[in-house]
Image 1 (cartoon, rainbow, N blue to C red):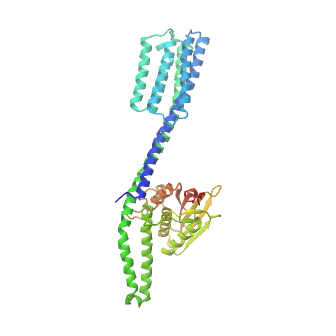
Image 2: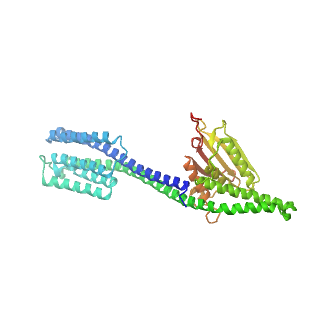
Image 3: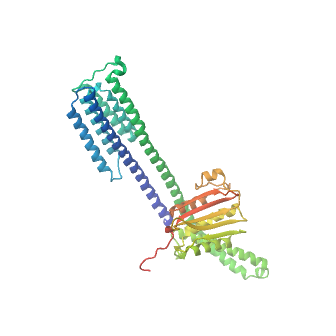
Length: 450
């Protein structure tokens, strides 16, 4: 059997989800690069303050020209990074690795000019390693570790022009110990602030990716069910046509013409047969095989009135409390998927409450751009577990195989139309399911050709 239109649409959605997943990953990379740019500006301010304080206050002669030159180069690189990455949406691991290697190189140069291995700010290398471990994959973080280790080894092998004397016996009065304490506090604060922020970005990304994976799995589930339903609908066409012929013959046979009770049974059978054929036609229409039928142009009020009337006539409901508060009527395209979804929600309510089902239609939003349909019943309501897993396949308290698919499919139809579906228990008893859809997904737009 060739792929149905429903399956093709679901596959398109799957590709869109994969694209959204990629966009989510790229967005996290951009935010991580922005965090690095901010961290670098803070590092530059700290470098300038420390250089000036050590040179002019502590009286340690530093090669100011060279150190300020390194700081200027790092500032120029940071400004270029800011301007280059701001309009872009794709930052890969190599770009983040290159940025961190530039930071390691700049820190190595500054330490070489200001005491080398004797500089207490040597431990800032650990901050670079920690940031790399959070931002980068394992192989790239190992590169940062290797670069930091190479920087420390270079400071040992190639001493700079300045040597900082350390005398721990002086306690807190020793300048080297003071610098060590400042380095510790600075590393701890920046690690807690920026690594925590970066980790939060990654957690948001992972949560978004988990949602997209779940949605992709649901879409794949819908593809399989759509193919199965379309095949079953094709197969059911012939036996339903045979039953229609048999019912027509029975109406003219003596045993049925002579007994009004049998005629009533035939009428009921004919009604249910028409309903079955309508369901099959709806499945084929959703699958792209409409047997020559096309989506009808109608209005929102007429669509809802016809839906409520047809549902009331074909279901054994005692009372359908149908109310609509729509204001100005609008032209829409009658969508078979939407009709089936509403019928399914009403059927679920009827199972829980055969005596009373409520259907309320209203418009909300600033300009009434949101259609809100509320289906209520007077049954036992949803269990806490059902509400917690609402919209997941096979989430049902009915205790039969395959239960719970109706609301799962309804949720995905609502999602495909840009809306949402949620459920709750009514304060006075019973349950309610609320469907909210943007009217823009149903409204028939008028063109100049019309």
